[in-house]
Image (cartoon, rainbow, N blue to C red; front, side, top):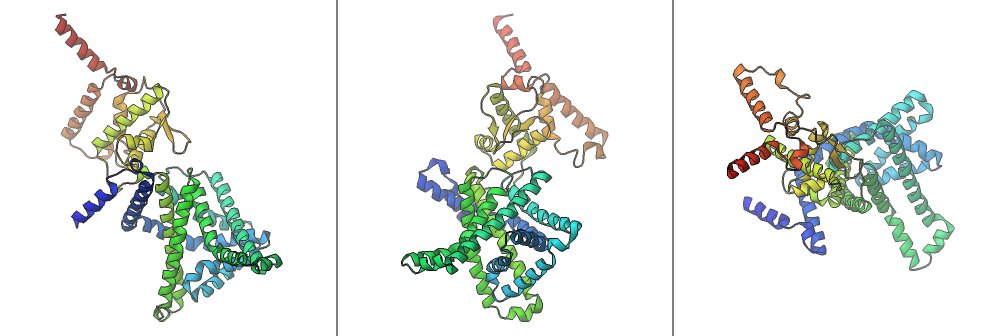
Amino acid sequence: MLGVKGFIHKLIWKDQVDSVGPWKGRLLLFVQILHVMFQELFNGRMARHAMGLVYTTQLSLVPLLAVSFAILKEMGVHNQLKPVLLSFLEPLGPQSYTITNQIVVFVENARLGVLGLIGSLLLLYSVISLLNKVEVSFNLIWQVQQSRSFTRRFADFVSVLVIGSLLIIATISISTASLSSQWGQWLISIEPLGLFVQTVTRLLPVLLTLATFTFLYTFIPYTRVQLYSAFLGGLAATILLKTSGWVVTSFVINSPNLTAIYSTFVGLILFLIWLYVGWLIALVGASIAFYHQYPEYLTHLNYSLKLSNRMKEYLSLQAFYWIGQHHLQKKPAWTIPKLAKALTISPIHMTQVILTLKDAGWLHQSRHRPPQFTPSCPLETTSVHQVLKSVRTANESHFVGVSDLTLEPATRQIMKRLEQGAKQALQNLTMKDFILNNDPVTLAGQEVAGKEVTGG
């Protein structure tokens, strides 16, 4: 079995995407993304995020639909909420009508106009909590460590609701006009134009789903997402959603004993299953968009692999060297993907190291996407020893520190000698000296050696 796995790894990962031809590169990128997707699905991380989103959706679905209902009502198309829900729940078969009717009743009872100020604010808070949970999940996929501020989050998420409502209105309006209006009927009567119009009308729900996924992948992550990458992720999610819908429908139709087993809870069980499948597909699509935009993050290694303390020191010192060097030479600043590629290591591990230096106050992160990093302190006064010490002691203030331990005096003495030895070895060596190869100890040694050679 290990031989088969090794053969597959060698076949998929022996070449870099940018080192082969364009068509072979696209095929290789597709296979690598597919391989990593299976890895992430089997390690359970994506499934855990999907389950968390299902739980949050249960609490926020009615408030979300109530706010959407209010927006649609202001636009005069609030009666179209039920058909949209029916379209989404269609794979659940006959249970879709029952679940839709129950949700619509809840939404009508939760109208903003009769709840008052406090109730309306609680509804809005529930909606923003759901969208915030989605943003956190997408940010984890896109390796984004920061989130929107509260005011930015409120403004952006309201925009999501409005634009989402407009997408629904546009789809419904086009569909209705093409089938019921006079000019629509006239177009249908003209062949082969009529066949084309009817085909497009049938495809509108699929196009709406594609547009929704593409919009979410572009807008929700707190980073700059390329439209084409978001589109490919949305296309993959749309195909998976429609395929999963057929599978769920077949399961419901071919399982008549579900009602006998779960009785009145069968609708709730099916609804939760479909919600879970939907969120899992949404996360898969977001991952595909991410890996298409940043193929350098693709790796056959398990992301749970940890860096040793020595590796962290090596990576931190080398990364700071290059960042400081570009800063002194006025060259473009480094990004995490470029540093990871130069060090032949996963960008995920590189992110851990760079954020450690940033949190210690040694690096400044720009607002570019992807972020660029520059020194945040004068290199001529920044001690190499202090930089390495901050890497070794990272997170001690957040977890257990040395002062919290019960140690024997001999243990403390050994560690103190080790610390003093490192400090003495790097005495007076600044980051600028290190970058310019002006190590005072080395220079002193070279000077002594020169005197011995010349008989000085």
